[in-house]
Amino acid sequence: MGVFPANLVTAEALAALLSAPSKSRAVGQLSWTSKKPHIHEGKIEVRTDIADCPVGYLRIYYVDPRPAEVGVQFIVNDAPVRRLDLNGSHKDWVHTTHKHRYLPATGREDAYIPNDIPAVPLLPTVAPGTHRAVFEAFAQECLVLLPEGYWVEP
Image 1 (cartoon, rainbow, N blue to C red):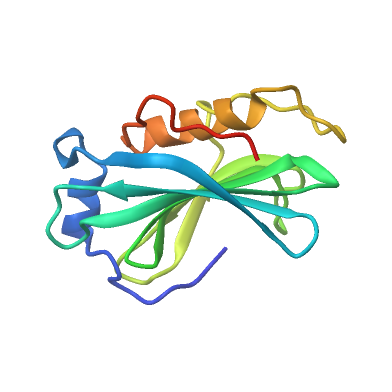
Image 2 (cartoon, rainbow, N blue to C red):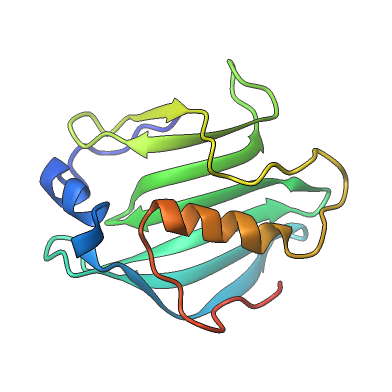
């Protein structure tokens, strides 16, 4: 689990950001880039009505040989406010889907196993639409409204 500077997003701003009145909304389309030869990363800007964090972004990434292992993040003020590791591995969890939450007081993250993310078999290929379904489920938990036509295939 990551350690980031404390209070990149204050507890008050985080509570407001992850509540319905924040009116967080993605704008434009998902923009894909390739990092190194096999890493695919998609980003879309997110705007909010929270003064301390007006702009952030949603990010999805995966590595070609392992497309069933996906990372999705909601980044605001350089802090991963929420983070998803689909079929991810850490010392206590191997190939287990789990989420992380940024803790403003310490900059650390806690982790938990969610029940709102579609299960994805750990195979060398994924069914069409899988990455989009995971991305949309994550955005819904973060209360980020996605615009029509936002999704672009990598």
